[in-house]
Amino acid sequence: MPALPPRLVDALRAADNTVVLTGAGVSAESGVPTFREAQTGLWARFDPQELATPEAFARDPELVWNWYGWRRRLVADASPNPGHLAIARLQRLVSDFTLVTQNVDGLHQRAGSRDVIELHGNILRTKCSVEDAVVEDYAEEESPPVCPSCGAPLRPDVVWFGEMLPPGALEAASEATRGAEVFLSVGTSSLVYPAAGLPFEAIENGAMLVEINPDETPLTPHADYSIRASAGEVLPRLIAALSQ
Ligand code: APR
Image (cartoon, rainbow, N blue to C red; front, side, top):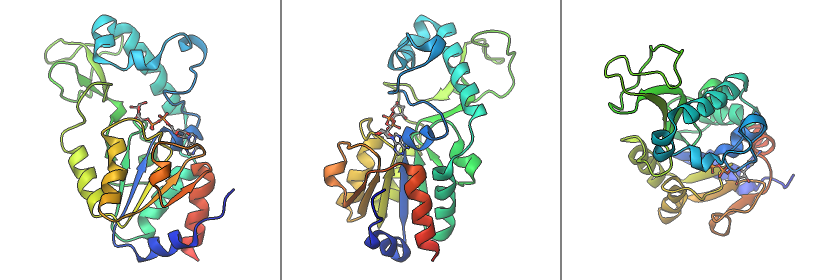
């Protein structure tokens, strides 16, 4: 694994504000497959980018609901990995800290992170497809179940391609980003906007930009440091260095 940039450790110690943006790569080591990875088994022949849309749900709600049911079970069976745990520890080691995630799996919270800004919702929550309100109790037998208040089909409370982000989430992420002295982009392909715009906002406002990803992304040429290794390797070492 490449060495940690010593300036990064110093910058994190000195920073008044740190923002971490995470993507599916952080959960990859927990066995949660990303959309861009090959699907397995039963769902191998479906293109996730075709399933995670309002159009797909309108066309075939049962198919989309069942696909999310499969993903929900994967998430329920997964556990936070050393990358998630290190991010939760980082929150306690540095002063003002904000975690922004594109992940919908809730693994950051299960690792102990607090006040997580979820840009793309959470797969474990369900909402009414018409009223947009979160629904806790519904009859599980149907696929999809129906809203107890209005009878419309229920859907996962996630952001589908072409949909707006949850009100307030992007604003909160953007505000924290503008004040960040250090911004870490971890495990994201930096392809999906508006989340992919956050690191650029950070750079414009003078932040040190650090990317942790085994692969190059469109953000790589703009980063002060690009650490080409997995989140589960790099982040625990960063915590160890910070704790010394
Ligand atoms: N550690 C760090 N990064 C990793 C690891 C790892 N162990 N494994 C893979 N990666 C990187 C990949 O190289 C890739 O760049 O994580 C990135 C995952 O990219 P995507 O699958 O595109 O995930 P993400 O960036 O979160 O996608 C954004 O698009 O799929 C939609 O709405 C969905 O929230 C998602 C959004």
